Image (cartoon, rainbow, N blue to C red; front, side):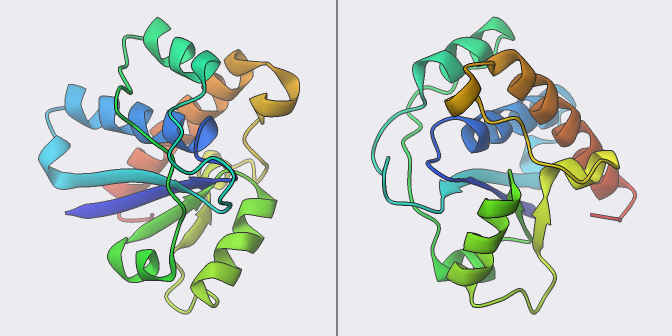
Length: 153
């Protein structure tokens, strides 16, 4: 089983979008049993809050339900629990390294790096552009799944 944790600042927009997009992809391919997929925050700001309503609406537009998801903070223990810890932007990556005490097993990755474009996932919190975030997350998750399939994740 491949265990993946998506991480962003608050765990209410980008990382839960990635969590539920990848879950949807593996479910549609009848491979859900081969994956454990979750998401978390680097901050404590949104702990216990649900997915941000515009992110929830964007997922729903694509037939994806994220009911019941609440924000949680990433912990040091997550490093041992997950095979891949995928950050949404460079600030998340710095905070993830701090929380994990480094990355001795090379598990911390930037989502968009899987697309061949090492850049941040568009942050809708500041832009309000959830469509751009959807495009980035969808492309990143597709590329991540392909990398896993090739044994290159």
